[in-house]
Amino acid sequence: MRGLLNHNQPEAYPLKQETNMNLQNTSFPVASGPEELVPSRYALKVGDIDVLVVSDGVLPLPTTMLGHNVDPAVRAAWLHDMYLPQDAFDWALNVVMVRSGGRKILIDAGLGSDPNLNLPRAGQLIRRLEAVGIDLSEVTDFVLTHLHMDHIGGLLVDGVKERLRKDVRIHVAAAEVKFWEAPDFSRTAMPPGFPDALRATAKRFMKEYGSRLRLFDQQQEIAPGVVARRTGGHTPGHSVVRIASGGDALTFAGDAVFAVGFEQPDWFNGFEHDPEEAVRIRVGLLRELARTGEMLVATHLPFPSVGRVAVDGDSFRWVPVFWDY
Image (tube, rainbow, N blue to C red; front, top):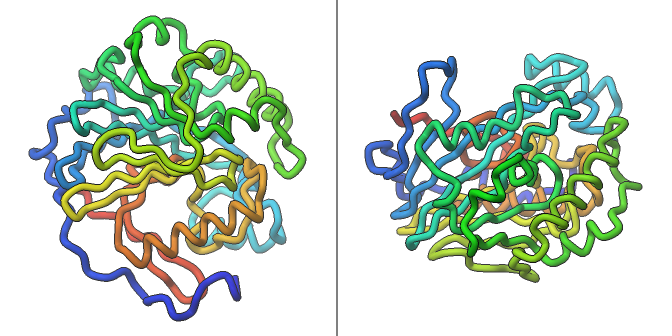
């Protein structure tokens, strides 16, 4: 990690105006159904904007995916210190719904329900939206951080396309669409079968939704205070979404940040198509969030993944928010 961080950065994030996270002040319903043993939705306000983090379930993956460029003994020591299993563990799958300026926006669409994947605990998004009283016909916009199958699969579930508005807008970076015309997996380190599954899902998605896409180059305002920005790194068109209102802000980082990425931001994730660029993007994003004190949510951080970032020596520290009920 030496050299990755600017040592003139502050030791912790600055004091900011407290974010209004009282659940009574959000218009999203948040009650959990009696069949759920743990919560799967978490609502908060970012200024005047309603935000709802929804769990799409969990995805079991080998722990080597967290840092395939490091000594296995070093990775094993980190897993031990984090009380995580050595072979495989469950990655969270988080999706965010935003309500701003009369628009209802889903950021990513989850994994879906492909029976060939044999992942029964994932692909829960559609069911959980229905349980909370959100109909797909209400969604005016989708923002796709990238076209990996755990971010677009929910749109390929049987019957979903027919339930969407005819004028629904699906925003994605133009570079991402271009990449999946002939995707390069030469720098990734995925389990067997994953590259083929990713290619097939992206191809099917483009066939189903290609004509509905709203492409942007570097940045696009989706609704008041909701801006998608291309970062690249994880995939060439990977994007993050910043939500800002009334002095508060939250960034949905997609796959720019993983659970190991605070203490070990230079570890390569197996799904990264350009690992060195992904490290550069990750460090820059975490440094900026540490400077501003703005909130962070990411796809694969433990649900609800709402927290802040602090600089901790040569790396970073994750500071989860206190849950507000």
